[in-house]
Length: 78
Image 1 (cartoon, rainbow, N blue to C red):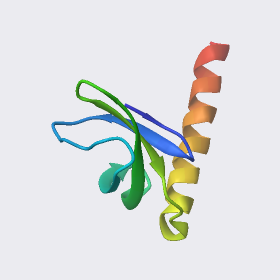
Image 2: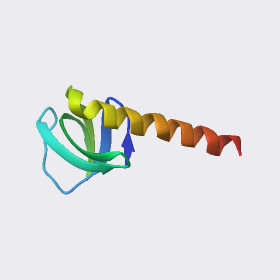
Image 3: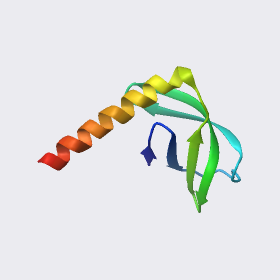
């Protein structure tokens, strides 16, 4: 649903209690990502995950976030 350099929100049919460590796998425009995260928020099927340091995946996440900010900036200017 939403991504930043520090975490991601997603919809899912999983049962993960707050504070649990999970492994997330998802696809971004610059490649697949496998990262560990902590469940920080839960609302019905919506979850908020905070990334646990993953230096190998950080570059892909950072590039995606930078490009999304640029795209959103260009859309707002139109």
